[in-house]
Image (cartoon, rainbow, N blue to C red; front, side, top):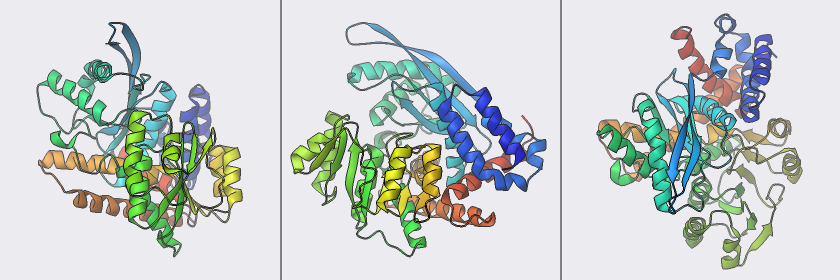
Length: 449
């Protein structure tokens, strides 16, 4: 490995030793881009990599809100404006009890390269809070969102930083956040948040865009292998917007999701999640997002409690689409032993580094990385920003066609970057190199700061 890359990785391990998720993703990205750094000694002179691993700005703030019983609560809010070299900071807000500075920082770092891959002028950022919306009333969530935005609104804007939704932040939360932003600013800056409701500047197909984009990327992988999506059986984790989008688009294209996992276990439906079952998924998760067993009860299919579906043999494709570090070495070994050829990451960093390295070493497997595969969500957020700035509304078909084109280009860029450095069809390294290249060039051209 390049000596400069090794030194920066060691710097991150020492300086950020209390932030394991961040260390993990830096090591994964920088290991991949080492061949490129070999050819650019000017990066070391400008200390580009060290600058790249430190956020331009990261801050925390107190979020105080009152529950329906009049009890006051205090949570921590975060915003990481990681890298704005190619455009305004862009990235979601995550409301979950397990949110930490390490998670926010790794997501912001990943977002920087993901946004670069889309070809749209968006920098990388991320934010959120350790507030958990689960079990809270609409009124409690509204009060929390209003308090959160009151602390954040001074630091965001259409040309500064554009937050969006993420885990725990859906259309309801975005609506409350935007309403408070408009109240405080007294202006209709509808490009300041994405994932908005269609009635006030949102884009069609945004909720399912990440899942749709993942399937479009999968199609490109299959085409490269002279294969087709028709008839393919898919196992996924998660059944939120992303998982649901995968289910829906796969069904439209002649494939089917036959396994999906939730917090309580996994479902095996040999006939696939299609038709009215897609509607039931929406109803089920709205009532109780922590349990997927009601699906098995309703449709008379297998439910395996307390387990994940990694390692099942009667599928063609695995697509982890739930959360980070969902697939560890034990699961990776089962996946490899199953004989399945395609492993398509969808969630942010769903595979631990050792498990990812192991899967990439399997000669019978093709591994695609999340920063490329799940870029469809932020791509449509970028398209939403374009519609807002031009005061236009595109049809669902128009947005879908643009999304498909973006995912096709992301795959092509990844392939080209890997081949340029003699790495063959290595989609993980290719995506890292392609995403890094644009950000690095912009940073070098703008000088040291």
